[in-house]
Image (cartoon, rainbow, N blue to C red; front, side, top):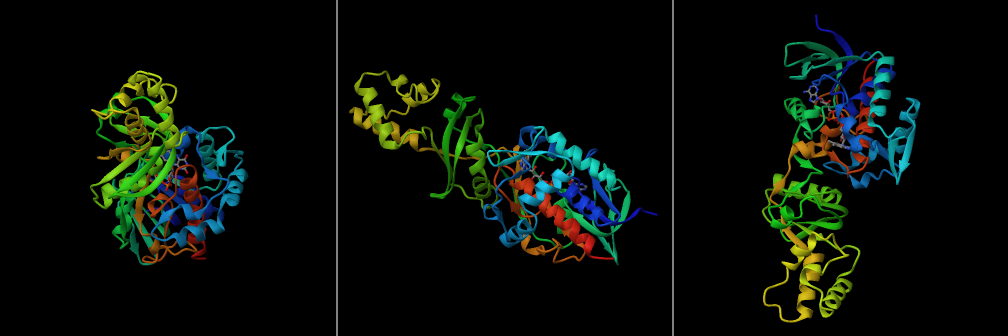
Length: 407
Ligand SMILES: Cc1cc2nc3c(=O)[nH]c(=O)nc-3n(C[C@H](O)[C@H](O)[C@H](O)COP(=O)(O)OP(=O)(O)OC[C@H]3O[C@@H](n4cnc5c(N)ncnc54)[C@H](O)[C@@H]3O)c2cc1C
């Protein structure tokens, strides 16, 4: 006979752990199944190993989703205050670093540790190496077969199998298929918060150079997003926080909407306005500076040769040269060929249609007693603590919702 539980949670990442803890605290016999040998592997790499687990201010309006009202409703009931209290009750001290919340230890491992201790205290049964092959409704229960022939049964299921980013850490997109087989609609998942492929000699020549810059995503001649931050030139193209922050719109345009004219426009000298930069370059030209030195002191030395190469051939006057260089430095346009893909994407854009999830208990509107939480849902926040906030909040409410469904 297969083991039977009140609630089975598919996926032991951030959302699944929060869901299982919430369900077990309501007195329900709860199990977690996960395809990996260990739970919560992705938590360990978050925030560069520090785990940016939340935000001091958590604006639901910054998320994108097929159903923004679902996001707002979840954070109204389980926001920063509740997330902080949840962790502090588990014994984790939290500190704010410029509005971003981290464990005081500065180690993501501490976050996973306190969650694992609570899993043990709540006597949640854990099945690792258990890849759910299906969620089969069978009368008043569900049967969960694994790909290697094991089975468990449960009266309610919480599907928290994540998206597709960093598949080596567990979430490989296989969980989408479980929900689709039950009739859920999938908004095509695309890699999000991801470095970009740009075939341009400048990127190759400047590889390894990191500067502060502004970045704008342009799709079919229209600006769709803008960010300031780090810009890192690499052999394949561009990375850095400014690029990651505009990459979602670019990835959606290229990978889902199949747009062709997709550009990133860079402001390489964000500290100066265009006129000021123009005047400064003109002054340098009039003072007889060499072409390769024109941006010395404004950009790292390696840029000198590249920038000199932007002087339009046959420019006769210093005024024209200065204007052309100011334009190239403030509005460097680069065609984007693609993204670095799932292995380097911090999250997934797209997922299960959030409009098919009931907002009180996060129950599926299609299959009763199936609940959905975390990155598997079409809900994405910006970088920096938003996505884990969604995982904790949606997981907790789904856990409570599943537990409240039966006596
Ligand atoms: C490098 C990196 C850094 C990040 N840093 C931050 C950060 O600092 N702050 C922030 O807010 N967000 C960050 N994120 C995003 C955040 O980690 C995720 O949004 C969040 O962890 C998603 O949680 P989840 O539980 O929904 O999914 P996951 O954590 O991906 O967990 C899903 C689990 O389901 C399991 N699973 C999948 N399919 C099956 C199946 N068929 N059967 C059984 N088990 C299955 C997987 O093995 C996995 O353990 C980062 C992401 C990455 C990749």
